[in-house]
Image 1 (cartoon, rainbow, N blue to C red):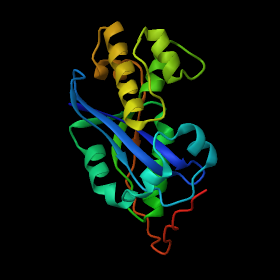
Image 2 (image 1 turned 135 degrees about the horizontal axis):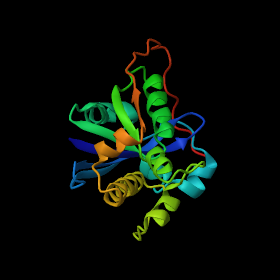
Image 3 (image 1 turned 135 degrees about the vertical axis):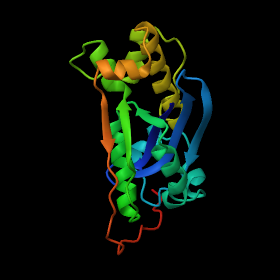
Image 4 (image 1 turned 120 degrees about the vertical axis):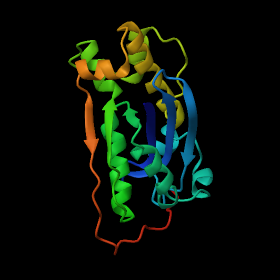
Length: 204
C-alpha cells in the first residue's frame, strides 16, 4: 500500500480554479517515494487576497504553465492508483477544487477513496473543534517548520501529522482508520456540458 498526501492552492476560491497541486507519495512506512508541486495556469481571474497573502508563486510564473486539462492525466493516475490511499488535511476543500475544475473542462471527475488527516486528528484528540495543521504540530510535538500555502509543503506536513499519530498510537495508518473512521469517496461522473470554454486569464 502507498499513501498519496496532496494539497491544492487555488487562484480564485469562488471559482474553484487551481493554481498548484502538490503531493507527497510514500510507502506504508511513510518512506518517501516522490514529491512534486505541480504548477498550472488557472485560466481565470485571481482572488486579490490569495495573490497578496497565500500564493507561493507569482501570477507571471503560473500563467506560463499548462492548464489543469494538460495535467489531468497525471493527476488522475496519481489519485486513482488502486494500490494507493489518497490522504489530505481538511480534504473537502481540495475535493471542491478538483471537481470544480473537472466540471469546468468537461472531464470525468476522479474516482478514489480518501482519508482526512484532520478528521483523524480531531477524533484521536477528542476535539469538538477542527484542529488546524499548526495546532496539530503543536499537540504532537512536531518541531519542523511549516511553509504554509505551498502545496507540496502542506502535503508533506499532513504526512508528518499522520506519521506522528501512528507513532504515538503504536499503530499503522490502516489500523487507526479502522478505529477512528475518517474516510470517504470521491465518485467519478462525466460532465456532459461541453459548451463552456474557460475564460482567458484576467490579471488583477
